[in-house]
Length: 207
Length: 207
DNA sequence: AAAAATAAACTGGTCTGACCACTGTGAGCG
DNA sequence: CGCTCACAGTGGTCAGACCAGTTTATTTTT
Image 1 (spheres, rainbow over the protein chains, first blue to last red):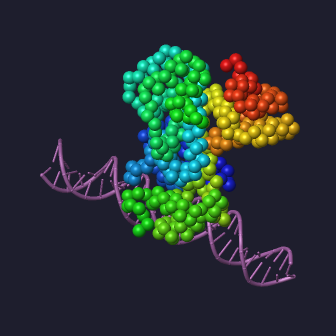
Image 2 (image 1 turned 120 degrees about the vertical axis):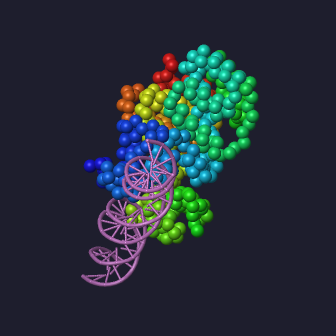
Image 3 (image 1 turned 90 degrees about the vertical axis):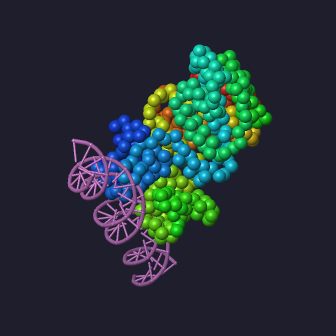
């Protein structure tokens, strides 16, 4: 039947079913899922099990429920979960250090990837935007990570960014000139220069 | 009563209660939580609501339940989250290229971290093991990533490794001498040399 | 006929009670 | 002393009931 194996919990199976259902039907953020009772009947399980699965996905921020209306796909970037986990887990100092360390290194990786891959015209346009537009540090590096053209790094970075922001660390001021300088080094394609400028920008010089 | 506000869902309140309970009682990984029925009674809510909260936390990897025994705190240093989200991220089975690229760069990151952090004695011991023991490429780099002492990278790498292996790509032969040489460069702490040797080892020279 | 009020049919939210499967324990027997 | 076995406790699951909202259809009123 629907159950994958016997010793797996029902609600886990439902999560999987839902995932494949979402993929199969191509559900996008905002779309409605079947009602709890319908899922219950369709999958041949109790409604409470369906609810356990849905509640878990809700806490993860993947879906949203509105009483009287239904359950909907959500445009998830993790905030729900990030907030929860950060207060839940990230208390210990080492985890915080890991998050910072990982975020920085992935940003460096992406810079390196850009050197390898990005076209010069794209970089020049980016530099122009850097000097003219208004943006935050997250905005800037989101563009960096996007330019690196690695979907995996992009997803991981976004998660780390949210974590990082939830830590409420003091942030340093970075001038447009600094951002622009970083892009210059990208255009010149000098690895070592990129690393130096990035470290300076992140104030990691002494490390 | 126990409920924080009236319009918040009960299971959310329970999650919060659990969090403060964990903090207050100083529960550590491996410790047991009160049973579902006891929580239900103590918090004045239905058992199904307790279960919705527990199931959500379980899916998050924060707790673990064993039928007949109870519910236990889990060792979640490494963010189950990454693993969970990975099933969603890797869902779009986009480019194999991304997986390879990311795995390699993270391995490089870890090498870099080792240069910064690892003690020489540890590296010497590692080199000895490299020359004497029997191991696979995965074994070797698992040790590398572990030495980097970044739990986040460790978890991400493990996922990538598993995915990478599932791709069934042809693998090249790597001699013990090559592995040992890599460690030598780590001991000498020359960044550029490490990169060169690693690339050679992964046959990325032309790239 | 149009608008407003009402009713019905859904949706999620919660609780209760029941039963199953599994684990640990302790009483009782050999 | 060691074994067996029943029992209490725990999570796993289901069914049913009721509440509280929303939407839609129906009826009533204007």
